[in-house]
Image (cartoon, rainbow, N blue to C red; front, side, top):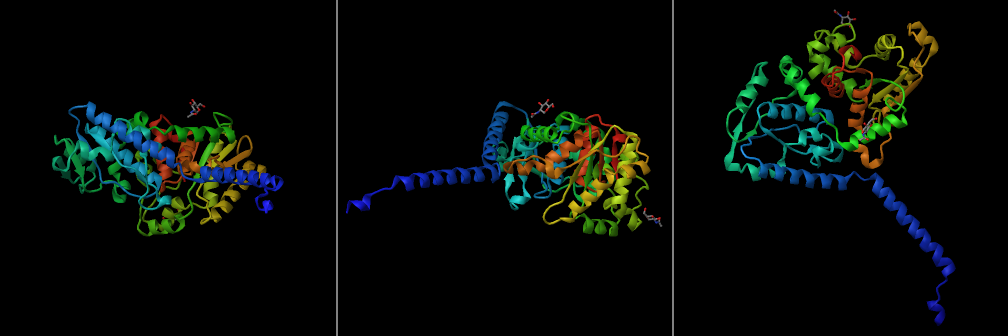
Length: 404
Ligand SMILES: *[C@@H]1O[C@H](CO)[C@@H](O)[C@H](O)[C@H]1NC(C)=O
Ligand SMILES: *[C@@H]1O[C@H](CO)[C@@H](O)[C@H](O)[C@H]1NC(C)=O
């Protein structure tokens, strides 16, 4: 029967149209939700190309590849990478960089460092070409660990030796070193290093600009104070730090930053004192904000960077409690705020990032805090101490920083 071949276009046409819409929507969802794989692949290719150009065009270079932290949080990795890059430059060596290990995507997923810190990858060489420039038989293996506070100069002496290709087998910027006064030797030159070599990628600067525009924060809107509320897994972690009498981390231990520490001073032999600085009560945080608000009455907007997430939902509750108090007229009056309470409170959860940009959110948080007129942070957190270092590297004032 010819009816078998009869196509009813009145039914088929809308069906085709629906199929078309569904395909477009699925493609859109796939495209916006996936990590920026295409960008990462392109960057890996251009990193390798730039590295090849560098090794083929220059003579007399000396190289160093370090044994680096793999897979901790972004700021822990970034902090170590910056210190090693600085050490390489101080000893006139080309730094051999490795991909960042991105924890949310599994232990071994590496992402290109130039997507985050192009200041480190410029004029450095990617690990992917290391064997080409330094074949295994030409590599000298060294250990840099010293058992005293002069770790930095000890490492410099070894790296100043003339071997062309050095691979460092041990790790020197471990937790014990990062909380010791050993970092103080590094600070004067590291502060200058940050001013010259610290650079975010364009995508991160772009998202930060978009954030300032949409949240109406300076330079696109009002001047603001930034507060880093480090909670999440810190409650248990702070108990451990208090039990083991740990002091602040990295740059928060610098003598120059001690005036930024909200009193009373830290006493590592006093359990409550460590907890007070590491996991401050909301009252203590309010007091710290108050002190800065009295100093800078024109700051009526506060941007809160917090780690609230599905696995740490109570952080949102703490955020709302702080926000309610800080916007309260009577409370601000009691606290002698000269021009009234905060008018507006924004938060990191409002950062307008598209799905494919999620990897960059933590960097945007750091940059938003670096650009704030005043920064209030946690001296046990690597994000906060990184922000403090970047601010000082950029000519920022100690008075505009508070460590709770
Ligand atoms: C971000 O904004 C600043 C000034 O507001 C501008 O100078 C800069 O070029 C912008 N950067 C990007 C990546 O859009
Ligand atoms: C320990 O620290 C807490 C919090 O700062 C303080 O109230 C207390 O007096 C300190 N105890 C001693 C013995 O110093």
